[in-house]
Image (cartoon, rainbow over all chains, first blue to last red; front, side):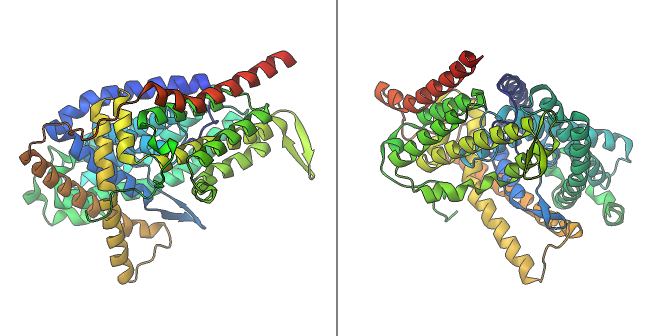
Length: 230
Length: 258
């Protein structure tokens, strides 16, 4: 969920704004390494993709539906730095034009939905790849873990920001439990979609998937990949 | 890419607000939202004043009120959250219709609803009076890194294409009798997303090469220079200035009452 205006008080909003700006500045430098001269066009098309992917609602349970955050997915597909940029741009455009998420909460939204999801999602993904056997079929498994943990991590970081600068006094322990619980469930959906998206991308164009670079030996894995993925 | 380039959010009118340079409007919107954000939530009249200011802008910009109201449905998820606050927040309680509600929670819910709604309406007005393309030009003029605005520009150019691809896939799924019912169906949707990513990215590569061959050097040429005169700045400053006054008055009221 995008944080609206009025949720987090002004000083903390400014502080998260500084965190977000720093994160985006670091990502700007890093992204040039990931995509070289084609950074802007390819990051732009990925941003449009994330925007589109967020429009795709999937049913969670009993009438409720959720949509993708996309932070972990973007980080795995185009690299963590570009991923942060892509999701930040999506969030900024949503706040400016689509009134989705408040303008004063933009720093908070970028911090929890772009930076935290990319760091946790990609970090867990990389750690997973290091543990799992060096095969292409490991990629979706690691992507599942990364995406799954990125959602509750985002929820926990929101709770932490709320604990410092929340505008209403809610029992924080219960809020943390509720937020984490709900988002573990949402995380399953996020993880499933991320893993299948990554696996179908890896199956066709492994060279395009940033997170799978270095593992590409398509001829060796042909045939065995299908069984191991499921 | 046969789709029209004017975006659905933009409401084509000829008004003072439409003619203002985009960066002035962005600064005005952000200024307004900031003033709203720092206003103490117990001063209910201040929020009524803000709403009147926005209504004034809506009239001047000749945007139909119905359009603004219809677009406000985006708010519904956080309205739901605000609804829970009076039940879960701590502190002093009051009896309302036989339910013990937290006073702080009620104020919290009011604050979120009021500030959130004002923010939403301000963004809706900005989007309705400014074309996305010029809006991005405005953001760039405000000194944001060009790489960021370029990503946003490309995103906008591809957005309709992506939406079309998605719709094509949805029709294809529906033609094969697919209907998303529970979480297990997420797999089918995710396969579509995988295909969507590849189609998008490959198109992006193709377009990038085509751009390179036409002389793209990492920056988009600026076709129409959007400068702002002092008068235009002054005009666009009216909204945030008025909002600033309201915020200041609200704080004055809080301090004098103590």
